[in-house]
Structures are given as structure tokens and as C-alpha cells.
Amino acid sequence: MRTLDNIRFVLVGTTHPGNIGAAARAMKTMGLSNLHLVAPLHYPSAEATARASGADDVLAKAVVHTSLDEALVGCHQVYGMSARLRHLPVPVVNPREAVTSIQHYADDAQVAIVFGREHSGLSNDELDRCQHLINIPANPDYSSLNLAAAVQVMAYELKMSFDPTIEAGRVGEIREAIDASDLEHLYGHFEQALTTIGFLDPQQPRNLMRRLRRLYNRADLDRNELQILHGILRAAETQRGQEK
Ligand code: SAH
Image 1 (cartoon, protein in one colour):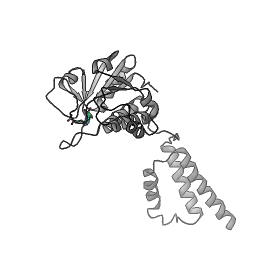
Image 2 (image 1 turned 180 degrees about the vertical axis):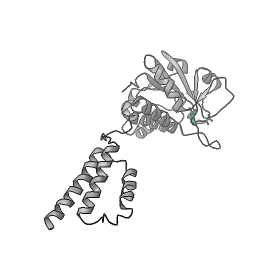
Image 3 (image 1 turned 90 degrees about the horizontal axis):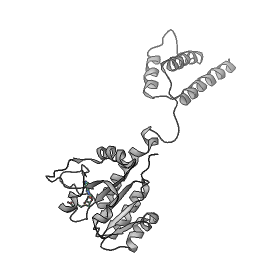
Image 4 (image 1 turned 135 degrees about the vertical axis):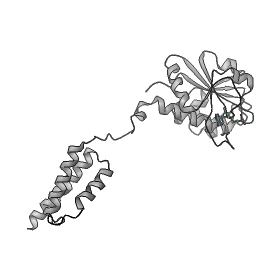
């Protein structure tokens, strides 16, 4: 997996320590661990630890700074998270668009993602420090997410783009694809077995085979499932043979 180690989340002026804990938890669930805090109102705090709920390791290594400048030392690119779409000179992108460029930079440089205060967001001076702005497209009439919820959305998008096992589609069982000739073979087997067991009358086939084709074409069968169906048909044929 491409590394998320070069990405730091910077929370500026957080008022509620519970949000710091919830942000740490949100980050850890997505494999992020570099948390930087700029002048938090109450920190360390028992409430932060409680809300981190098992992500205390992320909290324990969180770095506290007195200024945003200090938190950005060593960062090549700075992304600011903004709930408001003001008339800003910097282009604003959504998280999904942003991760493409973040991935590009984070390969060999430090990238910061900066989150603002619960009540007032980031100041204009702080927004000026960001080369890029990210807005989570939300309800235009109610667009401000809870701080930790915004952290979660951004962390999730990073995880989705950095982890190749997710890009591949499924985690877990690998489904082996089948092709059209496998399906034809299956339908041939159905026809033969259903005739053998007396379910299909070749003289009066009605639309049975067409309906079965429609059913199994919808099912997006993989090789394993195909083999199960052949097995069931063979068992039915054998059973019938023994009865006769
Ligand atoms: N009332 C503040 C919002 C504060 S929410 C304001 O209007 O700016 C706290 C922080 O969460 C914001 O500063 C921002 O960093 C992040 N955030 C919340 N909602 C967001 C959204 N829709 N898009 C991007 N960031 C968001």
C-alpha cells in the first residue's frame, strides 16, 4: 500500500477536546496517525482520551504547536479544509479530487491537511497559508460538518485512493470470471438434466430455457458458482438414473 505516513492532519484552535479524541479515532480507523494540534483550548484532556476510544496511541504521539507556521514546518504542500465557499483566489476541490494530487506529492514529501475551529473555521490568514482548498460538497443550506466528521470524510478518501486492494474492487474472496462458452455449456447441461429428470419436455419446451438463461445471465456467476450448479445437475441426473 502506498504510504499515508507523509500525511499529517493539523487541527487549528480546537475548542472541544472531545473532537480531538474523535478525530484521532477517525484517523486511526483509516490508517492515519500523524496528528498535529495548533493551540487547542483544552489539551491534554480526559474527554479527548475517552472519545479516542482505543486510538490513544494517535493522541499520545500528537504534536502540540503554538502556531500554524510551526505545525507546517517541513510540509511541501498545504491543503485547507473549508466549509464555506468564499470568493477565494485558490481553486477549491472536493476530497476525491484532492487525493489525486495529494497522492502525487505525498510520494516523496510531507503534506498537511488543515482543519479549522468548530465555530469560526480557518481565518483568512490561515487560509492564505494553504496552496489548495478542499470543500466537502454538503447540503448547501447546512454545509458545516462536525470537525471530527470532516476528518473522517477526508481520511476515508485518502484510504480509498492509497490502498490498492480497495481499488481492485473487493477485499476477501477472489472471484474467478467465466466466459460466454462456460455459460453455453451450463445451459446445455441444464437442458439435458432437466429433460432427464422430466422437468423439461423437449416436445413442449415453452420458454423454460430462455427464462433460465435470463435468470443466470443476471446472476453474474463466477467459476465456483458455475461448478456448484453443474454439481447439482449431475446429482439430479444420477438420482433419476438410480430411481429408474
Ligand atoms: N462554522 C465554521 C465551520 C467549522 S467546522 C465555518 O463556517 O467555517 C470545523 C472545521 O471542519 C472547518 O474549519 C473545516 O476545516 C472542517 N469542515 C467542516 N465542514 C466542512 C466541509 N463541508 N468541507 C470542508 N471542510 C469542512
